[in-house]
Amino acid sequence: MTTLTREQVRTSRRISLVLRHRPESAGLTLDANGWVPVADLLAALGISRAELDVVVEHNDKSRFAVARRDDGTDWIRASQGHSSRVAVDLDLPPADPPPALFHGTPRTNLESIMREGLRPRSRDHVHLSTDRATALRVGGRRSADVVVLRVATGEMAAAGHVFHLSANGVWLTSAVPPHYLALEATNP
Figure 1 (tube, rainbow, N blue to C red):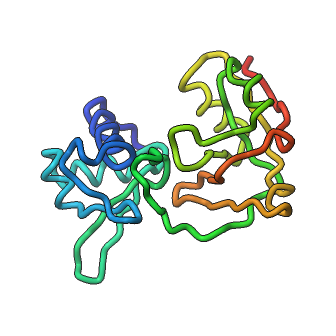
Figure 2 (figure 1 turned 180 degrees about the vertical axis):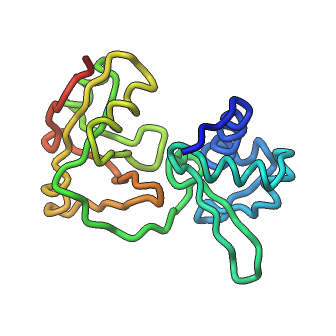
């Protein structure tokens, strides 16, 4: 995969901020499913289509989705991770998760998570990873002292909890009660 330049990473972060958390900061309004016309985003951020295409194609987490509508216009949205205040329905169908998924978090959060479970906090969903390494990396964005939790997603699904799979492979659910969690691993 091509590595983005510093400027492209900054552009990617600006796009994430606008599409996931603060569309109004760029004078944009997302539709009910989080989409905005590509032309509107380009104008609002002062970037070219070529710049956008590079960021979308080479983003290490495939954070963005682009789709062409029947009228020939291209639209873009963040694949997941929206703040709850943005109120986006990703229109993802329910999906059957694997038996276990993983969640990385700073160790300082462990006690409250084991007591209260995983909650989306300022987002719409709890994000879960398919492997320990990804969970460790995600948790490591906030702290060097990270733990990985195993989530008994197969049991959760059997009990009626709903899961969705985002376009970039992140599993989403509304919350994870504590009795479905187990300490899996810690960072070295």
